[in-house]
Length: 265
Image (tube, rainbow, N blue to C red):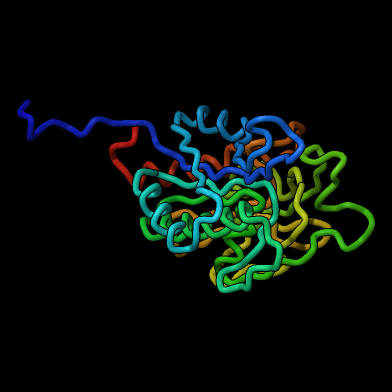
């Protein structure tokens, strides 16, 4: 076979993973005193299970919107999919005034992740937003967020139990998410301070909380694959009614295989 006729070698998919912003500890020692970034092992193990390479994504503290856009464009050019990970709350929405006293690292994370999302959409890459990431997808589409638990009884967030806390969701019939579960009701973990009452104009609801009707999962039918879930599928519950991680991550896999014929099966 001539050099010109050789096939492009197949390679593992590259999944970009956003990191959680960690404020430094003034009373700590060494590196513990400095601001930094961290990533849950569960997402790394999930990528490994998919046969994918995890690409951690972070930006220097204080990088402005223009710098975040340039960095995001350069990094996304090397990726096959993007996961906007959970952890922490959003400070700003596009066009929103920056609150006084905002943590510089947390603000950088917001600006950078909005830029990553825009760059990924510009390349029609599959995108999965997890918890905070789903909220970012919703806000980027012009949606509003409301406090999750107005009552004293925790529904969406129990700080003592964190991801061991869970509630039921109703899966929208006829959707790919419902097809991945045996029944119309499933259980998911829940650890978020904000909820989505109404989907944005272009979004399709995939699941709602059975108790307050808030949107728990959505996608954008006009895009290749952009999914938001308010739970953490990488930390799926383990009981008969729990929604497995397979439907969500399987959807992501199917989309990146369609996108690039050079990705290994």
